Image (cartoon, rainbow, N blue to C red; front, side):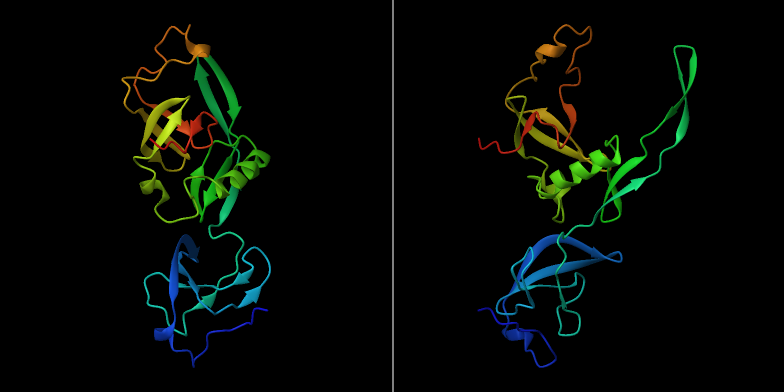
Length: 213
C-alpha cells in the first residue's frame, strides 16, 4: 500500500530526486514547473494514481515554501470564448449582413484556434487537442514541430511553420518538387498548389504525423 508523504519545513530538498515535466502550466499568468518527486505521494486515485506531482514557479528554485501539490486533470487550461458579431459583406455588387461564429478556443487564456463553427464543435476539438501528437500541453510545442516529417495526402512533407491563433501549420513537400493535385481538384481552373506549400489545420485528417523516414 502506498503511503502519503508530504513536504514540510523539515524536508531536506537536497536529498530528493526531482524529475522535471515539460507541461505548460500557468497560474494567474505565472508559468510553473511541474516535477515528480520520488517517494512523495500527496494523494491517491484519479487520473494520476499515486500522485507524486508537485509544482513551483518556473523562474524560482524549488523550496519547501513554494512547492505545491499538483492535481489538475489537465496541465493546460483549455477554454472557449463565444462572442458572435454581425458584419457587412460586399461582393459582386451585393451588400449583405453576415454573422461570425464567434467561437474561439483558448489555451492558457490565449487564442489558439478560431476555426470551430459552434461551441459543440469546439468542445470536440479540445478533446482532440488533449491527445494530439504535437503534445500541445507542453511548452514550446509550436517551435518543436518545425521540421517535423509528416505525410500529407500520402506524400512526404515537412512542417515549416506553425500559425498562432489558428491552430494551423504550413507544410512543404519533402523530397518531391510539388504535391500532387488531389483528384477532386484536378479539374479546377487554377493550380491547386500554386504556392507549392499548403496551409492546413492540425486536425486535418489528411495529415499523418508519424512519418519515420
